[in-house]
Length: 143
Image (cartoon, rainbow, N blue to C red):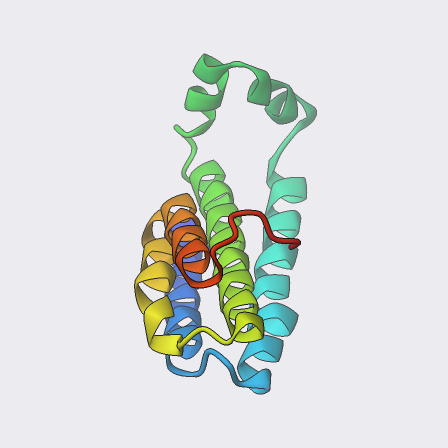
């Protein structure tokens, strides 16, 4: 598959995954599907592409910004990095959802947090932490 085809495929899967998380946040089957199949699948694809496409020199390039920027000239490197983002953002969204369920938060309050996590990862997590603080009156919680 070409980088463009992989990019389209993983984006479609990610979008469908987030729709499932938004519509069925507290269902056991959705959490199993997302972690056990989707996130694991992204991780496997990421590992396969990274280890078949990257060289030893690639890993050495992670130490300097200018070298890292040069890596992004290769579309496959961008796709590999994008899969990394998709997997971790979905994992963060799953954590937010599971933690909110354990605390008894209303699922509708999670929607802005989940949407921000889908689009802007860390900002969605921060929004959830603020929501959780407003609900529990405690900033620090065990993970």
